[in-house]
Length: 212
Image 1 (cartoon, helix red, strand yellow):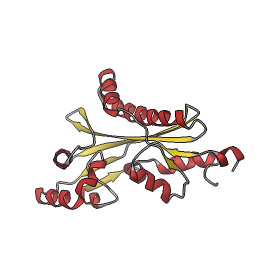
Image 2 (cartoon, helix red, strand yellow):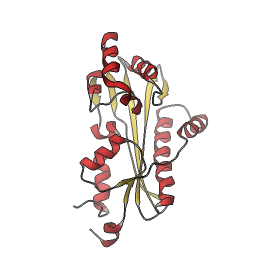
Image 3 (tube, helix red, strand yellow):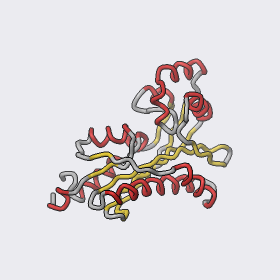
């Protein structure tokens, strides 16, 4: 590890408990500094400018991940700042619908009802900024298929899971009871949870933040 990397801070520009847990479990020493970003305004502005489709959702996730890291990098210019974002897209007869985090349990029920029996994409973007400049970015797009669960199962799932699922754009926590919602998953598990962890670790290893 070079001297510069040894003294550089690693900062997660996200309030996600899951992302923090992933980094901590991987043995990383980091701090959390949540970026103040008006995500809804950014999404609305970009949707108005971009051509509709999955690529637009990908661009939105990428832009938000970078923006979060940039905001925090202003306060910590020497640090390696990690920004991340997820966008859920559901193809409804050729028109991609973007899902935001549900605001309440009724919204969570609506999300899961729409996703039930369908395949959706969970676009996960991550960006590292240092000195106000992006130096790494990565995007993964896992494909997830929800099974045709019963209304009774949905009632039980919501009651047993509680409001913690409101932190997920799809109203599910795959590492928890949410695994029972799915019939098939194609893609990187860590990216579904919120970070392309293996690719992130590889970059940090190359910069001396993680031992080789």
